Amino acid sequence: MSLDLATTRRIAKLARIGLEDAELETVRQKLDGILGWVDQLSEVDVEGVPPMVGTETEALRQRDDAVTDGNCRDAILSCAPEKSGPFYTVPKVVE
Amino acid sequence: MSYVIEGKTGSWEIVVGLEVHAQVVSKSKLFSGASTTFGAEPNSQVSLVDAAFPGMLPVINRECVAQAVRTGLGLNARINLESRFDRKNYFYADLPQGYQISQFAHPIVGEGTIEIELSSGETRKIGITRLHMEQDAGKLIHDQDPTKSMVDLNRAGVALMEIVSEPDIREPEEAGAYLRKLRQILRYLGTCDGNMEEGSMRADVNVSVRKAGEPFRTRCEIKNVNSIRFVMQAIEVEAARQVEIWENGGEVDQETRLFDAARGETRTMRSKEDAHDYRYFPDPDLLPLVIEQDWVDALKAALPELPDAKRARFQSDYGIPFYDAGVLVAEQSVADFYETVAKGRDGKLAVSWVTGDLFAALNRTGKTIETSPVSAEALGQMLDLIADGTINGKIAKEVFEDMVETGESPDAIVEKKGLRQVTDTGVIDAAIDAVMAKNADKVAEYRSGKDKLFGFFVGQVMKETKGKANPALVNDALKSKLDA
Image (tube, rainbow over all chains, first blue to last red; front, side, top):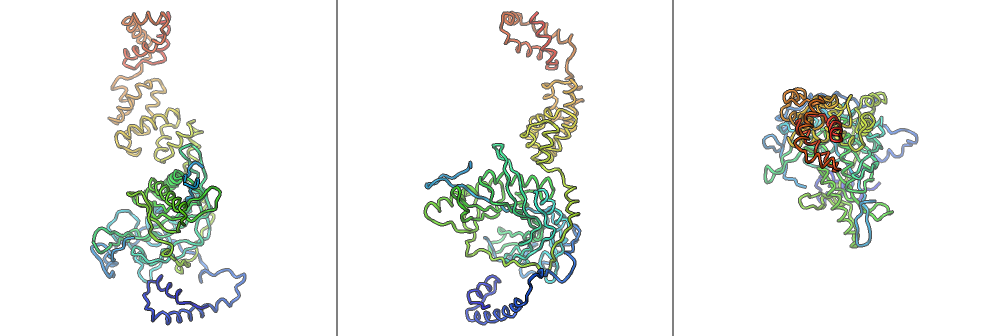
């Protein structure tokens, strides 16, 4: 598997990571290395083996429908980079 | 095909599919214990899970799963005993996690159908492709500050059901009928309140056009349309736009568009190049959701009677026409009201009072069936008074208006106003004699062959008895006296 520069740029854009052109080739090589390493898995013959969805044998744990959480606005907003009154604020986004 | 767009190059038909986001009725959120109540103080119903703090783990709400299963059953759909959750990745300020937990490849509900009814009385089946569960996003408020958007995460993490239809819809009217029927089913089931104004039900509309017999052409998706009327309008203007493009030799681009109701047009929101690449992958925090057939069966056994079944039962139990039964079952509260009135009584008489005089009174007084000034029990008692001959149909109108005004029982009103029907033939005979004496000329005319005057005499006798005479007795007695 070989990753090209255009795909590298696209992955960075989707992940909202700003890359200078000068950095692109370095990142491409590193990502390509990771992909190549993971790609070794495809050498394993998994014919007839059902996909593994987790290491636990139990199914998803479910909880009852009760209000047990929330009402902690101050705590949550204390971590916000920007806030105003009861709100988080972000640069204006209008689509 | 009744809806076609006549273009320069011939007729075009429209192809529409709908994706409806329906907010699940539950006390707490899909993956957190924060409350779902609408209209709370901003950011007061947010847990660390909803705000996507590091290390927080989602735990699914069993009731939300039950609501999705109930909805699937109500849509005659296949329930998948094993389903999975995936992460749908995108960045937006209303989505603290940077991904939405959704179900992509393995939804909890598969194919189903909805039967819709058109104004022509025709019915059609619209296919349901799937229903899956996902998280709602938060809300952005743009008008508080010139440079900032405010973020309220109260809605973030509330459970949604995304209900996807097949591209089976061929008319704007069918889209409206589909949404109304879906909303009706959701409300009967109690799985979504169907309130489009508050945003608890919203629709994305996929529209394309084609010449008869062609395969599908490129479609556009119109996002987040928030009323049934706007959905129908958006389809019309979008289809017309696409026909114009094709006929001018252009190509419709697959894109996401917005409907501007004020201008009556759709416009580009995102073109294909900017289309989201969601990079779905299985959520590693969530194991597959496995439910038992026994549990599904128990939920099914406890489902309320749904509109189609209720309508059929009303027709057979109460002997009322298909149309009337449809009007009654449109809202569950109206159906319940009617059934209280009609049980053990004349079902046809009951439907004419409920959909006639009662609806008119509700309209006039600005009340709803829930706040009706006349209870179902009281209206039933009034029908009993008609049935046992205490009052006649005409006096009943007067009693009913008094009930609307005073809220008193029909018995009390009849007593208070002395409206009891006159069945004493002596009194009726005396009234007839008086009328005949006062109108000797008309009696002569009648007897010389002008038998149309009979109605005049009935009217006069009713007036003489202040409307309280039993009309059948009046008819008989009048006939024998005039023909004597």
